[in-house]
Image (cartoon, rainbow, N blue to C red; front, top):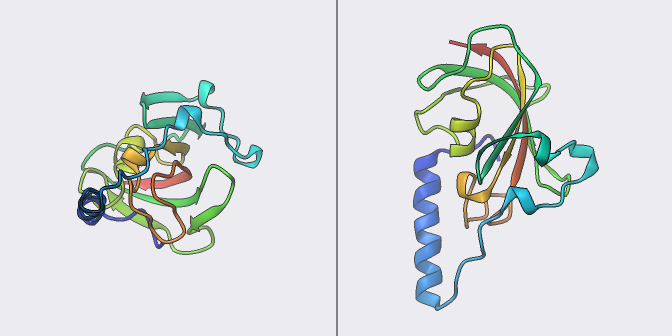
Length: 159
């Protein structure tokens, strides 16, 4: 996985998976619930201490930035790492080029689109994203279907 995949492609893949499940007579696995997951201690996830934005999205500012506030329509440049709840890292651009995305343009999973709004440049935010705002019932590379995702995202710039 290079970065959280575009919403339009994810939505199409989810529809295909749901159709395949209906045609085969089986139900897709249940969506994940971040509030009931068990997290590896190394991730530092403490759901009761996080801000709940929805049943599928919890955020925590690890470092509060002092720069421009990220908002829908703004482009953020970030350094990030993503893990599964068991502590398995599935992606990171640490030590590589920063990743830029315009919030609200559908360039990343909905958990990022919503979860990065309000963070200030220079800040670091932890996102815990349920499968409904992640990759849904479709596996994506090393990420199993219906997975909760944990991201630490350092926001370098907001433009």
